[in-house]
Image 1 (tube, rainbow, N blue to C red):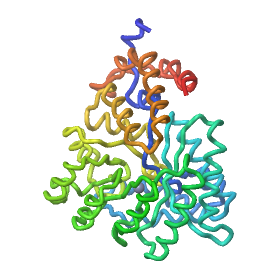
Image 2 (image 1 turned 45 degrees about the vertical axis):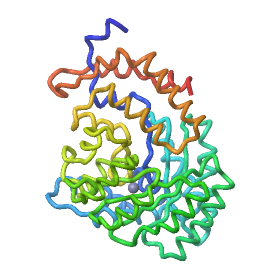
Image 3 (image 1 turned 120 degrees about the vertical axis):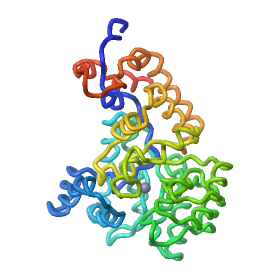
Image 4 (image 1 turned 30 degrees about the vertical axis):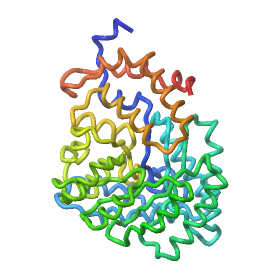
Length: 382
Ligand SMILES: [Zn+2]
């Protein structure tokens, strides 16, 4: 490949090309418009999704505008068949985007024809069925929604623990998610989950709530989702930030989600900058790729472009994400092996081809990108 060194590929194509790790993706929020149509969603609901691109251009946005979209996807997955189809489509989308490891999360719901237990069984079955077919390692995090009352959350936890014992290779963790303005973090519930062997990932500080953030940090989950209002420069308290620095809990950063929901004004102002500067642990995630019309490649690209990250550093973030994942030690070794092989066999030359300084002036070689489609090759290492 030495004669290729003068050639250029765009940051966007580089991000598509490399194997990626996804640690924060909600199943229902990840559904794309095509699958929503197949699941019987009407045009009006789907066009609501499209309005989000307009929201991006508005001067003031708020979380409520985003949260009213989630029921659309929930209504589309009310039967086992539809839930199975939906799960499969999301796994396929991530695989197409060269994701090699995916942690999906979802809140078990009971519907007319489906209990919470059956909901989980359906998603697990789909993950197992996709395993050999798509060559992507998928794990499941089960969520407690902030809207659930104590009894409902306790009932969910019992079922989650039971299902975790039945499918220990797939069900890895528990999450607290949903509208951050509703409900609160119940440390007793999550302590029970931890004792039962579940990893914990908690949506934290999406909006300013220093009291709750302190409770979450004291509990010390394995990972934090978002953590927008944690650093004092982003409305967090110095006390919480100091506590965070002692614990250094990995943060799942979802840039587009935060910008569209208006919790972060612009990509350049995202708190990932502080984490990069201080070498604190984080991963780059999509959150709800369907609702926010994004994917892992686009999120990696935003990080590279807005924070001037080199291809080598971006690739290093991948290794860090593997470490932060809820995969087993053996699986982590396998993922590192894939990343190493791709790095040593292919990426050395490609790193130097990535056009960093100016994304538009020099023409990039699109044909070269197509020629460099490495995925079929690196899937061999899997
Ligand atoms: Zn989330």
